[in-house]
Length: 466
Image (cartoon, rainbow, N blue to C red; front, top):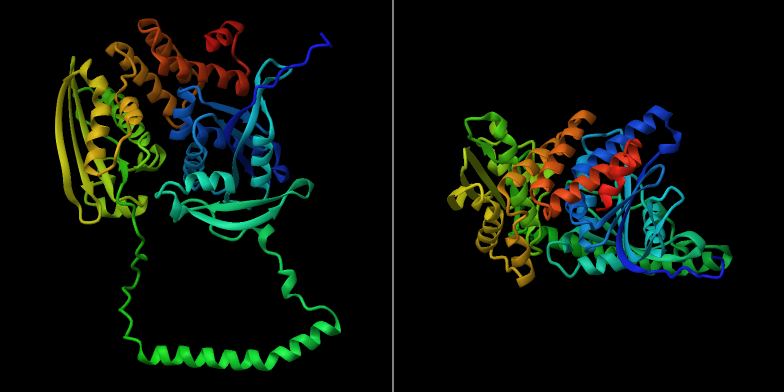
């Protein structure tokens, strides 16, 4: 009906815009490979998976990259960007630049009946990204101001000043980086000579000549002061050759290492990984804690950990590590955990839990609360409620969910394996129709197949919306 006007329903979202640098210069097969690597990295991102499971993420293909629209908090895209930057080191051929902005969006349906997003929020995120080079994670000042309210983000935010974007608009930008993530170099678009420092014409030359003598005198005086200080300064401490620079570590930072599977059945490794993943996810919901993402810790398993706790702590930039083991027998579960201070490798806290599978459903919440207490982190009532929530009341549904998730997170899983994961999700939902996480993961897999593979049936698409 031409007389009707569509009413726009705007909402504020937090957009991470990702671009593959140099994409257009690559051959078609190279472009496909890099896009596949990027998709895998996003699928492995803890922040993206959590938002997807909660129904608070929209993923959009942009041709030479991807846009992730988070409908949760401004912290989500920033944390996701750090995870992607860390994962990107596995693919040196994949050069990413990223931009983040919070602003209004409008969810629409395109000609293919798929969800799409329009609005100033996503447009500005792309313009913020355009100001960076390979490796940069740039934030609009609006996002940076929101993050700066939290202590653990402050050392990572580095103001750049203003940059001119499309239509002559100038935006204030902040560079997000850490020792291992992001790009600390000044973006090319900011490397412009200051107009005030460029002398033009004879008048400028005369002004500079009149300033030469005062400047020389000032320089000599400054040199004298520096020599005096150097002469009277105490001798410098001896530098240990090869020693890394001392970097302040957040006292409330933690990495959850893969839990060791001590079950008689080695196939039960999926259960140990599931417990670790649930604990990591619960800790990540406590704002006062800095929690390292799953991708960064999965290589520290078994022999890769023995005698290297201090080294691992330095590599991950955390003050604490959580180690654990899981033994499952029939309907009983024994979980042992210990919290280690990486700076001197002493054990701060240890606990042993023996539960039934049913009781183990709330274990990750208890662990998160205990660890937060040890690290002196204060939980808000809302955070306590979130971490204490059981994913389901049905232990068998939970086991099916963990089996499916282990397959999904397996690097390089084939399509037939992912089809098996979808089968497990469906069985979990059949046992507990209110199992929201299983429904969200199944919906994600169907949507992924529909967008990137084109293999979803009409029935599956309806199932994804159920």
